[in-house]
Image 1: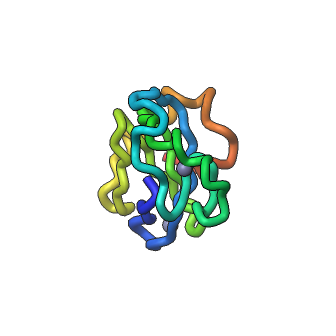
Image 2 (image 1 turned 90 degrees about the vertical axis):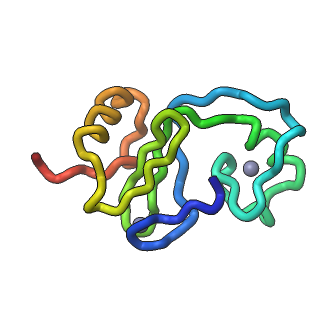
Length: 116
Ligand SMILES: [Zn+2]
Ligand SMILES: [Zn+2]
């Protein structure tokens, strides 16, 4: 999760909003964040050493990655981040995703879509 960049503007890190997660691995038995930590939203070098023991024990089932540079957002569906440039985005699938999570998505995470 710490190396994903925006496919449109190449900016990173992307901001992670977790909608649904599951602790799948034992804390301390996974690799740890290397460059950027999405869970604590900071560069690892600036985080206390012990804080990244649990990050990789969590599997993100559903979530949203937001590019803070261009404002685009990308869904994580069934554990897979869908990182597609504009021309390949599946708007119908995204709409379905947004409708499903509308109550859990904080305001400002998904930018307003143009009217369809
Ligand atoms: Zn971390
Ligand atoms: Zn971007």
